[in-house]
Length: 231
Image (cartoon, rainbow, N blue to C red):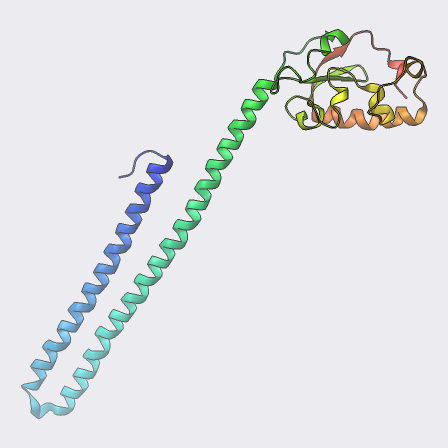
């Protein structure tokens, strides 16, 4: 009896199935051999009664047909059983490999989530955000603020906001104006004094909806003015 799971358990089960198929083939061959033995025995018996020629010819014909049918049927059955076992074994191996890969992938995702986790706070200052731009810890949290809310994008968005990524300029800071303007360039002191227009504020709402539904919110940005970005 096979106990346990994993590779050894599947190997043990495969060996048991091979044994069953082998026993089936041996049994069917033995059945055919017994039938042929009956054929030769009947020939010897009927040769001693030559005055019953018609009956002898009829009997031999019937005895020849029966063992041949048994043997051919047995071989076909054994072949079908072997084919079924081989096909089923291949499918089971594929499923087992996929399940193993899926388990490893899930473990990898869980570990990445654990490493990128950060304890939420009620309030974050802009100075609090700066260390979490992804440059000091390649697996750690990455924080950014949008419309007064602080999000951790380190787990699901590292490929977008991590060092060297397309939106890396937004990491570790308030990214509200970057998103509103669809800009990846720093603004001058004079530009920062210009309020967002209606189109930019509307654009910011789309970005906020996406980020709020994708990433983990970990707190609020200190001293945020809602009137600076709300529609």
